Image 1 (cartoon, one colour):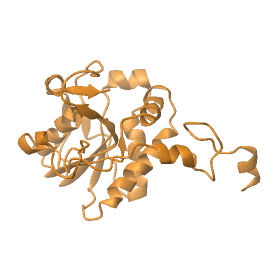
Image 2 (cartoon, one colour):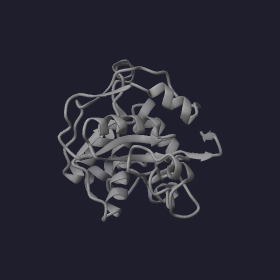
Image 3 (cartoon, helix red, strand yellow):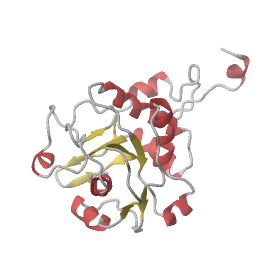
Image 4 (tube, helix red, strand yellow):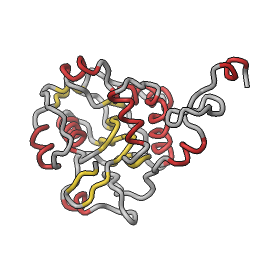
Length: 234
């Protein structure tokens, strides 16, 4: 341990105890993260056994596959909330590392040619001050040596927060919300976001990318919301 580490030790993002080296979480908090271990092969919905969920069998999304390391439960909810609403920007590095680990674990799946963070509408960006999806995308692009494009996909319609809305309601709200500026010039793109709830946002972007000539779209997110029947949790 260096003198600087002894004087100013790294603190766990969750319990605030000192952590070894420069790790963002202590061993206890890291081991307590709810991992997504068995899920739908396409949308990453938690399942009791591998395969496709009923929705993806009958109404497959426009994206090919979702890579996701975590369930949207505590303490993951606290980490993402701190990133989105409390300016705890250091949380992005931890979540991006976990996303990257899940992508690299699927070694048989080719890496995309381009990363695109889910864009915020300019009004939302002004009020928040930053785009949390872009904060996740930057370290992923560096780690995997992939180009990152921030000017290709634009959110052209502003909506209020969609918390609590059904998948159908979200899909209706999002029609015509995204615009692809020009020709992407690639065949395989990954969309980056923090949480996948119903998948309506990334599905709308994936449709727009396909219309612009992209042949495969994957989704990379930090956490997946669990659903019980038609209820969203949370």
